[in-house]
Length: 53
Image (cartoon, rainbow, N blue to C red; front, side):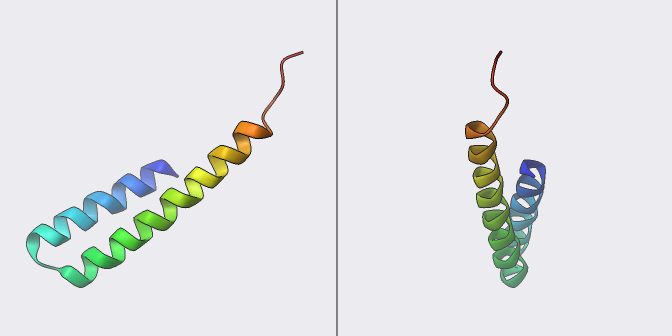
């Protein structure tokens, strides 16, 4: 999930550098959503993970 975030972030940065503002905004929005989903899943797994015996 984090790799998708980084991929979309790189796409957004490249698109912004080349002047494609619509694509850059969309890719940045997708990267933000992916990051928050990753963060939520990480926190859930942190609190409900396996316990030591």
